[in-house]
Image (cartoon, rainbow, N blue to C red; front, side):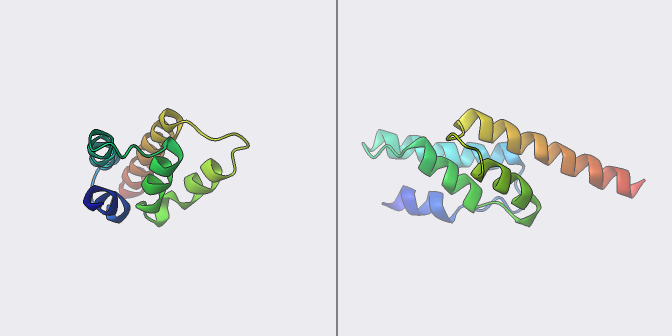
Length: 94
């Protein structure tokens, strides 16, 4: 129960997307080790729950997919979006 609550309370905040996803996966793996495997859908929902407003558009796109998105699709989409955010910020700084 502890790991499940930690997973649900985890926020991206100042973490890189890769670090955030790694922490989330560690909780997912610890739950599986404790014989409490959660579905990929619940894993994806936990990931999206911890994201900030700058990911709102991506969350909407993922949520509106006709078929259930794979965990790989979600993680690669979020990492790509983080890259676009970083590029936009660096372009604005110039």
